[in-house]
Length: 199
Image (cartoon, rainbow, N blue to C red; front, side, top):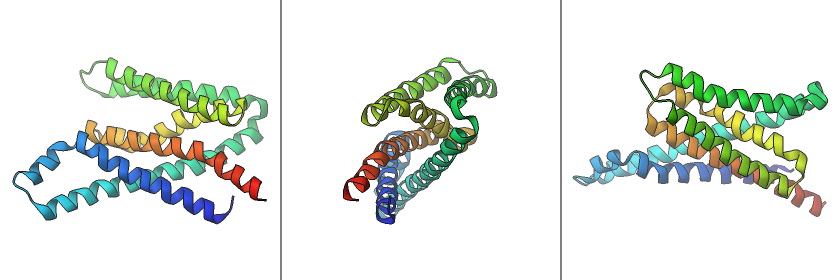
C-alpha cells in the first residue's frame, strides 16, 4: 500500500465522519438548531454546522487511530498466541459485550437493563454482518478478526462518550465510529488488491 492510497483512505474516512456526524446532529441535537432558527441567526447556524462537522472529524480520527492500532495488535496477537489467537479474540468480544451491558447498568442509577442489552445486541448484530461481508469478500479466516475489530475496538473508541454521558453525544459518536470502522475495514482489501494488480 503506497502513501497515495493511505492519504485517500484518511481523507475519505475523515469526510465520512464529518458528514455523517453533521447529518445525525439534525436528529440528536435538533434543539440546538431550533435555537438558532427561531429567530434565524445565520452566523450561529454556520458555527453550529462547523462545530458538528469538526466533532465528526475528531470521531473519524479516533476511528483511524483505532484501525491502525488494530492492525498492529492483530499481527502481534498472531505472533504471540498463534493458534490460540482466535479463541482469545472471541473471549475479548464476549467480555466487551458483557462489560457494555453489566458495568454500564451498574454505573447507572435506577435505570432499566434493557437499553444497555439492546445496545450491545445491536452492536453485535451489525458487527456480525460487517464481518460476514469481510469474510465473503476476502476469506473465511477474516471473520473473527473483523468481528473483534467491529466489537472490541469500536467499543474502546466509544469509551470517552460513554464516560461523559449524555445520550445525544453517545449516539453521535457511535454512529460515526461504526460507519468509519466499517468503511476502513471493507476498503482495505480493495486498496491492497488494487496495489497487487498494478504491481
